[in-house]
Length: 471
Image 1 (tube, rainbow, N blue to C red):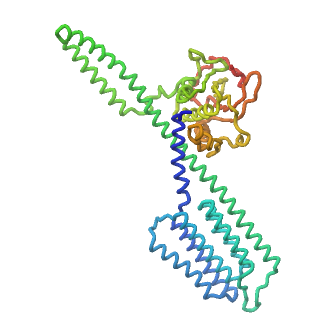
Image 2 (spheres, helix red, strand yellow):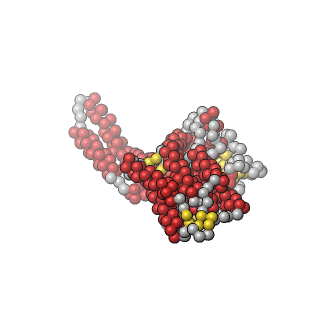
C-alpha cells in the first residue's frame, strides 16, 4: 500500500523519538557528584557518632580511607569535567558501580548486613533502574544482590568498648539479608516500570505537540491560500478580461490607454491584498474557523481517498450519495482534523474494503462513529487502546511496503480530542442484521462544550439511535 502523508509523519516521528530513546539515559555528572557528597557527609558523621558517641570500636583508618577515596574521586571529576557534562551510559554505569563498591567496603568494615545502613544498597539500584538502560540496570541490581549475600557471610563484627562484641542471632541476620534482597529487587523493578511509563508518556506528549504544531502550520497555510484565492479572484479576473480586450485592440492597430490604467489599478489592488494578508491576524479569519461537520470529515479523510479502500459517509443514518446532506456546524480546528485523520487512517489500514463514517446528532450531543470491515481490535490490546507506543503492526507494515507504526497514532488522536472536550471509546462492533463486524471508534461531544451557545446549530435533522447504521 502506498505510504500516505500521515504514514510518513509517523515514520518521521519514529526516527525523531528513537533518537530520544537512545539519549534518554544520559545523566549529568553534577547530579551524581552531589548525591555522592551527601552520602559521604552522612557516612563521616555516622562514623564519628558511632565511634565517639556510642562507643563502638571501629577500624577508623580503613573506614576513613574508603571515604577519602570517594572524596578524591569527586574532586578529580570536578577538576577534569565540565560543570554541565553528561555521562555516557558506560560511564554512568561505572560511577554507580564505584559507589556501590565503596558502600559495600564500608559496610563490610562495620558489621555487614547487621549494620542498619545496609539499607542504602537500595540507592544505587534505584538510580540505575531509573536512569540506565535495561541491561545496565540489571547488572547493577545483580551486583547489589550479590554484595548483600557476600556481606552476610564475610564482615567485621561491631565491638562495643564495654559490652564487647555485638552478637545478632543468625536467623535475624538471615532475615535482614532476605529483606534487603527482596527490597532491592522489588524497588528496582517498581522504579523501572514507573520510569519507563513516565518517559514513554513524556515522549508521546512531545510527539503530540510536534504533530499538532505541524498540523497548525499546514492549516494556517491552507487558510491563507484559500483566502488568497478568494480575495485575488476578482482583480485577476478583471486583469484577464482587460488583457483579452487589449489583444483585440492590438489586432486593430491600437491599444486603449484606459485598459492599461485598469490593469495597473488591478495589479496595485493585488499587491495591497497580499500585503494585508501578510499581516492578517488569526481572529480576522474567524469566518473560516467553523464548517459543516461533513466537510471537516471529508477534509480529514482526503489523504486516504485513493488507497483502494472505499469511504462512505452517513448523516443520522442517511447515506451521503451525490449531493452533501446538511450536517451540524463544527469547529474547523487543526488538532481535531489531525486527530480524525489519524483515526480514519487506522480504519483504512485495517479495513478489508470499506470504512463507514457516520455523524449522529441529538438535541444536546454530537457524535462521530468510524468503523471498518476489518478484523477489529485484538483482545490483547483492547483495554490499552489509546496508550502511547502501543502497536500490533511491527514487521507487518514493512512486508506490505508501508511503514512500521510506533504506536502513537491512537494516542495522539485520543489526547487531542480529549483536550477539545470529547469522549472517545474503542470497541468491536458485533455482527447483526443492522451492523457489520469490525473496529468501531465513537467520539462524543456535548454541544455546549464543543461550540459557544451563539454558534450552536439548529437541529434540523431527525436524530436516530446510535446503533442504527444506514448500510
